[in-house]
Length: 239
Image (cartoon, rainbow, N blue to C red; front, top):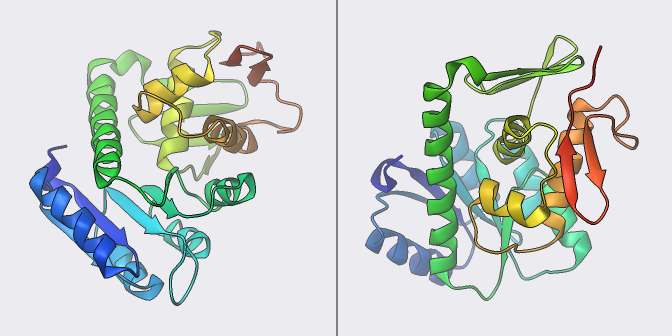
């Protein structure tokens, strides 16, 4: 997707941050920039506008970003990046569990956010191209679940299961590398599109979110396995 076509929502109660990020985005070619200073404003924009990326502050005057993220997930699976001054594991995990895909801690360089936006949008485009070129590989069938890339669907025991976009992209990557051990660094670079991991928890939590959807018992996985000291691998079990 061209940057000028992407619809981006910035949510922060600090006008200086909104203006700073917006200014850099305009210089980088983004044109459809939506802004909100409260959770209520943000949710109204989400309901009315097809968005491609959301930058969401954790601390807002009428709610917190985690609760708002849960509400946003009722309407869209758009990529959500949290802005947070909190860096404890609990806060990071809370952000991911509420439906977030990534985070940046304050103070931050707006160019880092732009780089993450570009990486995500490029990744989404590359995934669409890959689907168009590989029609015979766009559906991955397992005995317990099916991943349909083109439809963007995960079917578990015959029923569609909601999956956030970043979690689905990670699942697709595992499907395309079946029975291969993939390190956290490799997954982060290939799926998130960043040169370095922001936090070791990022991949771990997203793997757990996949397991919660595809595994009969997420605490004792039989499909998405941990290979101690090396990473993870998705296996196709025989019926």
